[in-house]
Image (cartoon, rainbow, N blue to C red; front, side, top):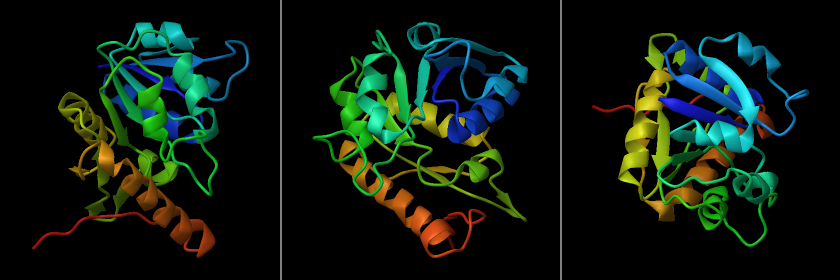
Length: 205
């Protein structure tokens, strides 16, 4: 796949690296070509950097891994997203997010042409995206959205990042549930002091 990574920090960087190693074409989209976080990502195979709209135009899939407070501004800078899948990895934490919206995904949908928006890659730490293995077990990922095409993309990319499964928890009306799951993980890891090396795995009998 041709993937635009918007947000080249910890989450975007971990997924850019994993996907590049799986053979995907990675187009980093940045606002400042001279100074941007994640310049080391250009050492990955099949990875280049462009202004945001150019990276989007060259890609079929867009990962939004930017702070929730910038969601509207960044979405408006994407350019024409018609026919493209947007994967939203953002969370509104402690009320810090786009005004007038309950979730980041809703804000993205309100400011883009595509309806293929899926919330995914938001429920765990970047360290688990870089390495989802815990001994003999592999962590799971989760997704929500109305777009069936977007979910096919999300599931494949979750598995390409090393996750065992990407569970579908419902449509756009479940965006908030995934953001709550993210806060659950953050609370355990940071507030309750269990540290980042914890993750979620679905077990079946």
